[in-house]
Image 1 (cartoon, one colour):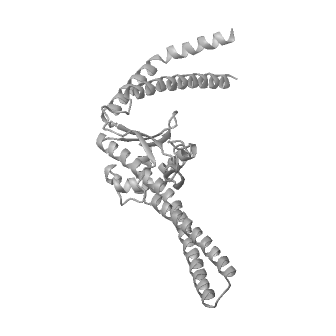
Image 2 (cartoon, rainbow, N blue to C red; image 1 turned 180 degrees about the vertical axis):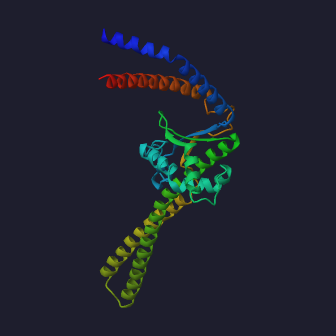
Length: 299
């Protein structure tokens, strides 16, 4: 019964305030229409979808495998590869590079002489940039811009830059391996040289046949060891010089056929409904305030 009375009271307040509510709602709705139509520019969205490649595809074990099916590998990367690429995609260094490369400070009409210019430019770009993992395990890089061609170029170039940064990380590890083998080869070449000189000196001094056999065996073992490391060095240098991509693009960005945002109808509806709710709350608060004030005065 009390709830029914409260509902009736609410309807009475709304009916009493119907004119201010209607007038305010209509004015705000018209203002929202004008603002969204004339002062909110259209933004076009371009998206690139891709999967990370499996870094092991360029490893020595795979490139120089002796038999088909010797090593079982997945063509696409794992969850850790996805995480690494998403980390690269959202780094400050990549965002700063894109801002500089496409002169976005000028593109966004931001005064570069202002103290907060860089911050405002990055903030504006991040509002119109997204790099996320899809439900299918792919990576989706999206860019919104007032110019559909600019959005396309930025999205495609971001993926190219991500690919290069990811490749640099992989190549850095490969270079460490190559340098390690170079050092090993240099040390073993010195061992072979010393053994060769020692055998020549022992032979000249008239060493026994048994000793020469032992020394020759050591030399052969050292040479075999050296040749193995030289082969591994050559194979790793080949992987270092292999041209490869760390991403498999399933859909490149293209100029959007129509704008993606703002959705003006939803904005107007949302503002209108918000205004109605606000005016009703204002009416209830005002009526209750008057009622409480009246009771206090009559007490």
